[in-house]
Image (cartoon, rainbow, N blue to C red):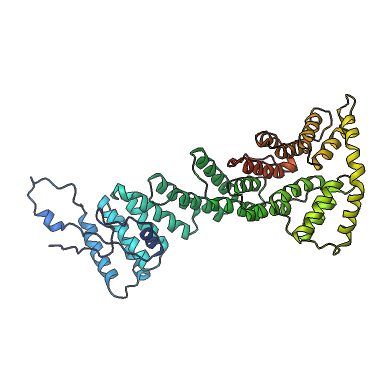
Length: 452
C-alpha cells in the first residue's frame, strides 16, 4: 500500500491561513512556511466499496503524481536539502499534476521550496499553480493575490504586480485601502511610468474627496516629489494645490512656493504675484527673497508696497537696517515717492473710469489700488480691463483674484483664479488654495492648463 506522508511545508487547511498582513509579508519575503493536512491515502481510497459515495470534500490525487511526489518531498525534507539541485525534479512533477488537487499540492511544494531556496521565480510559479487549481479557499484569495503582488514586485515585474495587487484590493485584502492605493501608484513609479502613476494617484484623491474622506498627506507629498523630480507639469501644481489646501502648514507653504519658483523662470510681473502670496503665507525666508520682491515690484511704480516689504524685512530680522545699501536706498526712495503717489490716486481713478480710458491706464489703476490694499477699487479696474481689446487676460484674472481674496470674497476669487492659464496657472492655483484656506474649506484641485 502506498503511504504518502503529509508535506510539512504546504498550503494550509481551511482557517489555517494567517489573517494578518504580517504573515503575507513574511510569506513573500521568505520568512514563513505553510503547512496543511497531507494527501488522502490512495491505497485506502482504492479499498473503498465501489458503491460507496466519494466524499467531495476530500482531495483526489492521481496515482502517478503521488508516486512521483513522495521522493521529491522526502528529499526536500532532508536536512540541508539543496533546492537548486532538486529544482529539475520539482519542475518535472508539473506534467503529472493533472487534477486540481495535484496542482494545489505541487503549487504548495514549489511555493515553499522557493522560500527555502530563496528562489522567487519558483515561489511565484507555485503561487500561480495554486491559484490556477481553483482549490484555494475563497476567503484566502485576497491574501494569495497580495503575495503574488509582492513577489512580482520583488522580481521587478511591475505590470504583473499591479494585476495581482488590483485583484487583492477587489477581493477585500485586509489592509487600509489608502496604503494599497499608494502601493499601486508606487508600482507605476518603479516602472518609470510616472505620468500614469500620477494620474492613478490623482484619481484616487478625487475618489476619496468625492466620498468625503480625508486624503492622506503622504499621498500629496509623494505626488509632489515624483512630479517635481521628473519635472512633470502641470501635474505637479495640481498636487501642490491640493497639498497646501488640505494641509496648510507653514512648512508646506514654504515648500510649495519654493518648488514653484524653482520649476519655472518667471518674468518679473508673474514673480511679483507669487512673492505677494509668499508674503501672505510667510514664506519669505531670507534676504534674497525680499531683495527679489523689491526688484520685481519696482519702487517707482509701487512705492507703498516696496516700503511695506522692506519694513517687514527689517522687522523679521532677515535684513538689518544699514546692512544692505541697495535696500536702504530703495526704502528712502519709496518714502520720498509715497506722498505724491497717493495724491495722484484720485486723478488716476478718474482717468481710468473715463469712457475713453486706455487699457494701460485701467490696468495701472488696478495695480496702484491693489498696492494700497484698496481691493474693491482694484477689482473693479481689473474687471473692466478684462472687457477691453488687447488685455493680458491671465494677468488681469490673477490680480482680480488677488484683489477678491483681499476683499474677503474667497468664493469669487477661486472662480476667477480657476480661469487663469499659461505660465500664471500654477501661481493662480496657489492663490486659490490660499483662498480656500481663508474660507475654511478644503481644496479640490482642478487640472491646470499647461504652462507656457
